[in-house]
Image (cartoon, rainbow, N blue to C red; front, top):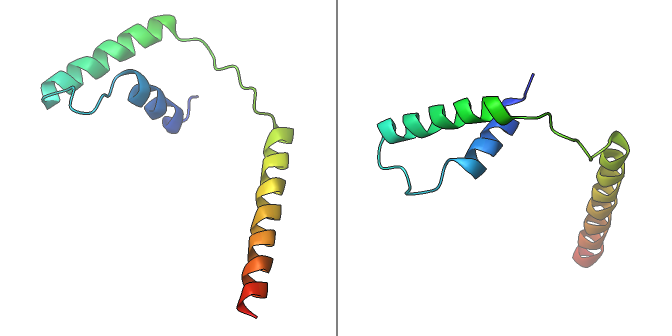
Length: 77
């Protein structure tokens, strides 16, 4: 099962260009044409971002937030 966020991201990158679709009929046609084409050519995503990568990223974010918080406290003192 594909998450909706992934589907909408692909549609946004491949179909929806701001100001390119003048009305709902054009939008509907473009979306249906894309879905038909994509269903014929789609392949599974090759995920390269592992659980280890996510853990490392979250650790780096946490460290930056702690450093920023400590700097804010020391500047306020």
